[in-house]
Image (cartoon, rainbow over all chains, first blue to last red; front, side, top):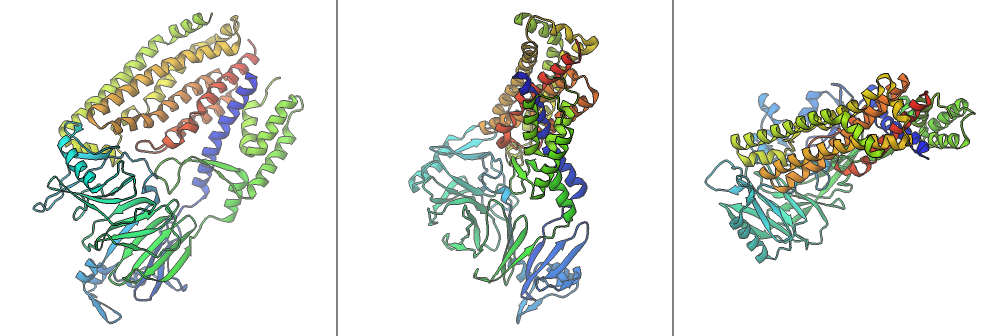
Length: 415
Length: 222
């Protein structure tokens, strides 16, 4: 028995190692990875235009109708994005639809927000300790607080970094206000920007155990907390805060169902973005605002989708672009033929290991068949039937991985 | 007999055990003083920010030490056995080959775990002194994969040393190098944590693969 276990332990280890390393090595040699296409809504053409990478420094600049451009023409179609180039050419202000946009108007009308799926709540390891910046109206820079906060089952605790102990007065001050407002501990979602590299601080949005969302700020070490009217039934996955001088919205709420809602400065009224297909688990998301339009781009493994909206966030145009795949079909077929599955840790939509078996396409079955034929041709008749059966099933399920492991580890084996 | 086996392994390992324990303690001390220095030199809240939000590992220096520890222990245990094929003498002891090998490996693994356990505890206590408990706890889930890598390296080294055929030895070496590399994947704290329950299963598989090499050693002729 021990012989059987030890024999197959070694073989299994070899299969694990090969299925982890071989596909990665193959991809490094034969598969070309390219960046995601950049998709914009052109206020001049009133349609989507995009830059698609062809590998290296080669790019396609096209619009959704199929017309292609050079880089300079492409950039000129996006005056709100490349307005500094226009400034160099003395081509400002920009005239669009009878309206005039100066440099200042463009600057104050722009906002961008990119959300990677791997940065969302529960998609990456994050110690739940956050700095709550203390706003001082008389100080221009945002000083880093000397403490971090966490939500326990009963309190909003502040831990002082110098002493590494809980700051009891500060903790009591914030917890008392939260209790007064009806906060139900512990917190379930905590959203805020943890850097002081921002124009001003809007603190944190925290969802309690009852689904109520609270806006927590700290002004001169005093709590400024608002119980927002945000619907507690929203199944919030994450709240992304993005301080911007436009002060139109605090940030964005992402629900587990893929809903996107801006939290407006107008008494926390939610503005729902009319995005048809957004799955937070497997899509990245970009929001681009310019003085005329808002564009939402969501990208996934095979396609990039965009929705253009007016300034009232009403959708009027959508576009989906299939990502260019520079890998030849011969390479893809060979990969499937050789590797019936792959052990993966990396996932572009996760900030931590996502262990999974990724199976090959239909050609993997032919690969297994080929491996079985080789196995049957080379199997030694002197082996006990149980071993031959075991090896057969191993090759049946693991293809060339099993065949190589058996060949390398059990060659010259005596019975 | 089994007590004698453990004692024999201890005699082989004690100097190397002391040496790697000393090395581990030295690196733990270095980490402690580095963190203390950083806390004094910079604002503590900024060091916290780096550790919590930038995902800097302030105990990064310990990363490859379990790997080194595992390799040293396995080498100290099995290289003397392979010199002049002395291992065949052990195979003549009045216990089964598997039991004898199991106790040999058990002694090495126990010493390895004593060293890594002490090291992990030192790192944990250091972090607990200067950081909130969550940071100290995150170090444990981060270091588990490094300790596991050292354990796989220990079994891999034993397996390769006991192996008699050179092509198979090279193949096993590549397999174990890949497995160890797999356990060092990622960055920051807790990157591999979700995969750890599955990765822990590699350890018993690696241990049993040593039994297979020992069987082939015996089959080659004692």
